[in-house]
Amino acid sequence: MRGRVRVPGDKSISHRAVMLGALAVGETRVTGLLEGEDVMATAAAMQAMGASIDKVGEEWRIQGVGVGGLLQPAAALEMGNSGTSTRLLMGLVASHAITAAFTGDASLSRRPMGRVIEPLSRIGASFTPSPGGRLPLMMTGASVPVPIEYRLPVASAQVKSAVLLAGLNTAGITTVIEPVATRDHSERMLRGFGADLEVEEADDERVIRVRGEADLRPQAIEVPGDPSSAAFFIVAATLVEGSDLTIENVGLNPTRAGIVSVLREMGADIEELALRGVGGEPVADLRVRHSPLKGIEVDPAVAPSMIDEFPILFVAAALANGRTVTRGLDELRVKESDRLSVMAEALVAAGARVEETADGLIIDGTAGEPLSGTADNPIRTHLDHRIAMSMAIAGLVSRAGVEIDDTRPIATSFPAFTTLLEQATR
Ligand code: S3P
Image (tube, rainbow, N blue to C red; front, side, top):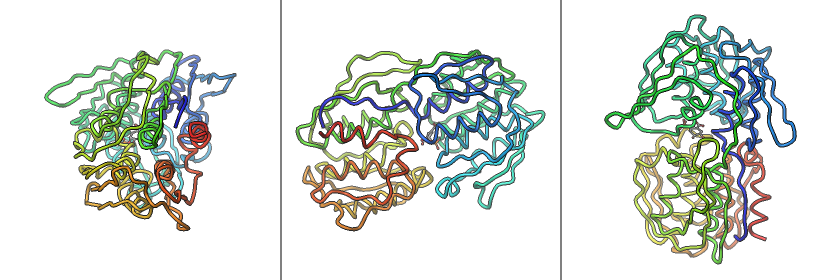
């Protein structure tokens, strides 16, 4: 792994840029937007509810409808594989007097939506979900939404953001209390668009208040590179002997950068170059050189700041010297797939030593010895982009290579993944 690669725009920030741009009055311009399927699902939904969204050269231009101005969509909102689109858009619809149907693929249709249905019902929205609180579902937003105070029962930036977005068109102050900090892109960007939003840190809790009936002012936004996409290249360069790879423009918001500190604790050599601010977020280029890793106990408290990086961390642990223990990861079971059991099965199939527990994995690493790889038994990726990419990286450090059953889900978050991987391994 040598040279330089530039990872695409941050998925979380891209979704929010499209949504808030579509709610501002006037034209928002976005560069570096992630053009993955998930973000395009958000853009199509915002267009279906009245915004106009076009790409001119390298720039996305969004004409918003104004808070309160969303129109009733003429057809079901197709969410594809995207939990973020679904939950955040449900928040927006909840405080507009419109009816919308949400549909998704087989993976998304298995994921729990009760976590947003519950607070959004208190605001006054009504729902007809499929059994188990799942998609496909139909919802009608409140005509007179009620401001709520909501304590998050799960550490989830999606649930937090759904409530805050609903609060934008709700008279009064909507409050979310986070017992554990999760990614704060919604808060940063809402402020950037001029919303009246306050964050109070008290006794290990974050209390976030947003004043409703907001007027959002259009912005020029530059989306930083996605640390969750960079993570595949950080781990690859760490594991592959002889590597010296620079990954450009990586967002290092502290609520996202847990993977960097955990890999460093395991012995990774990650240097931050040209630290700067992009779009209200800290960003650096990361120079990563090969380094042997040692197994560690991963502190469950870092989980929210690297919740999407566990599949690739498990690959790193499979090659480390000694045992890596992870726990407190129940949330991984309700991602695009059950990432604990799917990664345990995939890594074992590729020759790693892995034990699955109720809320984590215990991995005994090979101390740098390559994995055997898969022969003619492709890894089942279960419509989960991060399983596909993680196991592709595992293939780089295996004797026989790793075959996966389906690369298509990679396009949901990182369409250029294979091209960049070929570029860096040439
Ligand atoms: C996201 C929040 C996380 C993360 C997802 C993106 C977001 O989900 O896994 O990929 O953009 O808010 P949860 O809120 O379910 O933890």
